[in-house]
Length: 106
Image: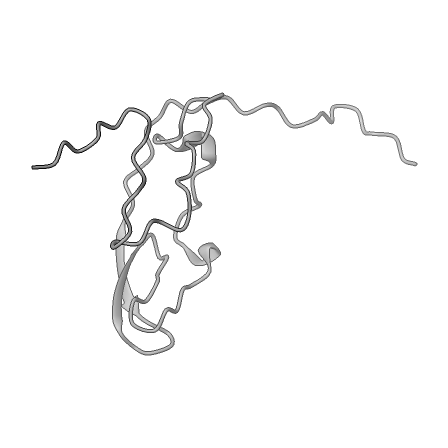
């Protein structure tokens, strides 16, 4: 095993960035599969006609890290509960809960 050279150290912890992210640039191109004229952000495209998507690494700028996302929820916050699936069908009514008042009728 070779010793670690002097002066080498582990990567430093990243501090939270306070600088705002630059706005994305609207770019346009032809779909590589069907030729449809498409628009994307920073060279990342998805065709709505045939479903072709280019790889994220082909973009003009690096993608922001999760800690650079201004919409990221604060640390320690839990994900919202998922709704039960599948949703009730439109013709089926839900059973009344304990707080529901019975219908007095005519």
